[in-house]
Image 1 (cartoon, each protein chain N blue to C red):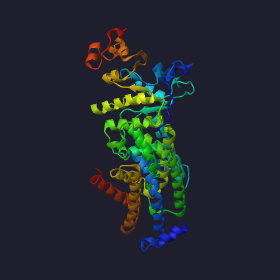
Image 2: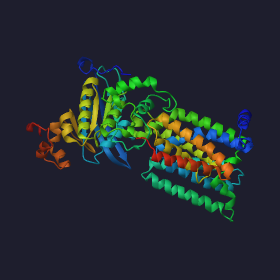
Image 3: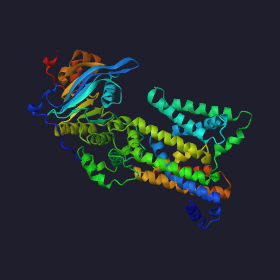
Image 4: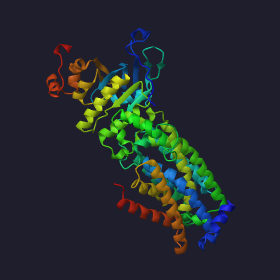
Length: 274
Length: 276
């Protein structure tokens, strides 16, 4: 079940002909038009393995649109390419997706096991026994400290538990690119801490490329290796300190650098400001 | 077919000796798995309003059949129901219109158009049998047709039900796992259109949707996973179906309505004694 991982980021000598050196996913010149108007325009991103790239921007900046384009759900121009460190495998990345807080019916009689069985082939959950799938499903859930939730109903899970289950699902099989779309909105503080701790560990363990969309700036500052400020197109990108202290960013969020400090966890070298 | 027939005839009950009751019982045995597969999905994927519209649109289907001079309007009904299913799918996926509003408008228009055409010259009473349905009028040919539809829907659901389960949780999530959301939704809505249309001559336009939704809605109040959800839904339809058939025979009431009434009682019980 746990697939051998084929990223070798430290094997620098193997990287040849790649625009980003190490294994990475690139978004090249991606635009999404709706009704002739650009929602997202000429976005270029390099998402490195073993890094969390946070996507920030005001509401309506096109973050969700960009994610849906990357998922292949919206028609778009430009391209999405994956290249592993050895330069051996390239093409479309295998994507794992953790959606925003789900609005499914809480009374739904779907158990966590059903969700795993349904995503594991065609055999209908209601017709075929799940015995042989239970062990592997429990192992995958254990990665996110959720193995005790196997027989619980999705609707009976807390917000944090549900997001961890969805994270486990997105990690099976291990994706080239993991998309987290505001994964902790509506999750309590403890659940949020646990979720981010697990994401941080998984990032190291599986050398994952992660795109995280979140409004939770303090968490981003702690967690993200790189921040991309999106407002229809990429306005700025770089380390959290660089982007979050950028005047354009502060203006878009109605902040000043003082209020960022108040948000906590931000110990920025001031010289990082352009 | 004739063996089954003979088997039912061996039951030591007065009603079981009558040929139309034997066929009706066979029909219920076939309808139970069919409505279990579709009803559980309709409720989980929140499409109750959609299936309701499919039933109502049958009135316009009948009217079109009459206008075209077809003696058995079933084919006209089937074609029209499929057109309605495709239209709603299109509205849902391609336009920004709220699905509820769009379906409501479509439903009301279909009913009004159907009644307007069928009532021309004051002859609507001829078609009231479609409103109420008559399970006891079912013929051996109908039963063979029903068995074929059951087989087809079973095959479609074998391939599509897991994918539809993922869609019911989140369509982006489903897509990220390789589900062709548009295709499985299309297969599902077309199956639903066919099943609703062929069944409503026996169940009735007015209550067909209740037979589809109530058993699954009741089962949801008890079940924690998909296996028990399907099993309980199946048992509810089968038991209430047979009981409704017998009760309606002795009390001389419409069979479809009696069955739905019994299922409604089960639903109320499930609301009171639901899972913790």
